[in-house]
Length: 271
Image: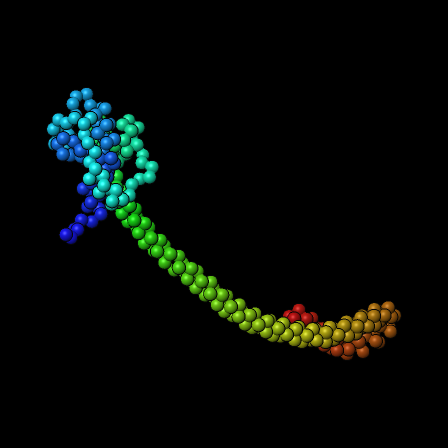
């Protein structure tokens, strides 16, 4: 006969209706339903009236419930994994095998039947674990996608930074070369201007030196003429009249000397 049930389906069919975990020491009630021994003991201890089967609601005697040996052998043969250190409920001391979807907390089977979580939607811990693992895997996948985007962005930034540094180096070299050429041209123009200025200055100085020499010669002649006239003024009346005629003939030359002096002074002032 072919087996069509997978391990997950077998595990679902071998769950205790109270704790929704795989049976541990299963006991069979008179109605035919099986429960974990610990679940039945805890349920009987917290009930004031007689025990009723949680599934079919039939009155049963929990103290006379025999072990379900066949079911226990099937579970042992399958060797289904279980929590090595199961957490227990602080109130009922039963394994925390359920998850209350409303209150978002772990509970035991009796909490769902008798406690504050009655009528709440509960899910087996294994199912919640699988669901949360899938959600976690989805979150990790999303984070990896975001990480990949960030890595691509970082790569682009690094490339841009490298490109900018390289372009800056090229532009710096071009600017330095251009300014070196400008400095060379400026130095050449400066040397040309200084040379022209020095040549022009030398020409002016030579002209001024020549005019200065001429002016000094004229001044010397004027001083000598002044001395002669002063001496002439000291002559006696007869001698003064006799010499005055010759002095008058020289007056034209004196005017010419004065004119030359004025022209020399005028040229000196214009320079």
